[in-house]
Image 1 (spheres, rainbow, N blue to C red):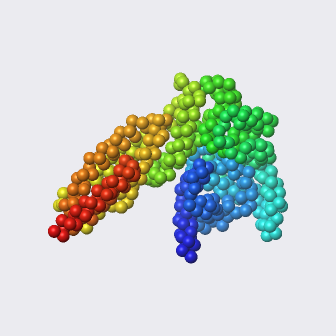
Image 2 (spheres, helix red, strand yellow):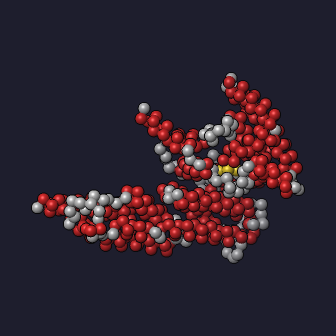
Image 3 (spheres, rainbow, N blue to C red):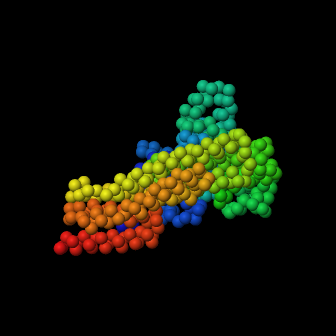
Length: 468
């Protein structure tokens, strides 16, 4: 009973999140699963975040079965990110519902109703094969009609604006082109995907040769398929940025100028755009002080920067070199602005107070302590990836400041606890407890354990003094 109530509370919380927050949370859970990091109740969370939580007052939703079947070929190309970001060859998950509504309302309303009714009847008899056949036929119709709609506005700016307004997504025409392109190449992409390994731990040697041969085949190399085929490959990579190895192999050199002259230059562009997408997730997590979720994003950006800098020759003033430099600078500035505040936050919490500065019965704010502890962990995470993100100097400096303060500032807090009266004792204890927590993150568990023992002794001395 208690578990059911907890799940219902969690379901309510998830459904109250904004679409952007849902997308960011879903992306983080999926990335953790890909890294092999277990998350409690992951299956429940994924089901709810991908499920059919409908906006208030809306009857139709993209998660109804007709829409799900229609969009099924796009699953590998759906990205859980804010819809206002452009995604080459992909589409934001939260854009699927507006596109379905446009198809149902404006593009082919009678056909959509007929298709939806037929699928609904098929579901009553659990006839999955018939439902999928209906979906394929409807997809083929939609491909023709979407192409007609795009052609009709090609040379008319006002018509393009009207169509974009009808669809209602931030990058409406690009989203339609992506949906159209994937559905048009549906069968070829299915064949290509079936020939790829389910997971590619390291794109090198024979594995690299095999994937390159598949991309050069009539199926993978077709102009309507190539972009999405590269995205399918990236989705199978344990380290997505290794996609650039295909570009290096195609050019038979690591020189950026020669790589850029081949069709496989798209690999580098896709990787850099993926770094930009991950950076947007990182920025949102930092803004919301969700520091526990940033490790994966920092690792992905770090890995991409390392692969691009070590496996490609980006010397000179190439567009890729400038783009990578800009991304590294953005990450560095974002992280610096946060971690440089940590020593000051810790000092404010642990600063020794005179007796007249302590309110009777007061304690440190638990939220402030928890946030500072999370920021200290954040500094440690940043140190792991500092080399490729231009963070070496600031992470070393901040870590040194934290270490020095804890090593020199502990004695006054213990003395304050020993000399505390009954009214000031709770505050002195809360300061020492916070110090132990912070020390565990900065100086290690052994140091924190010794500090805790010293704190216990100081507390006992204080109680003996009080009795005396």
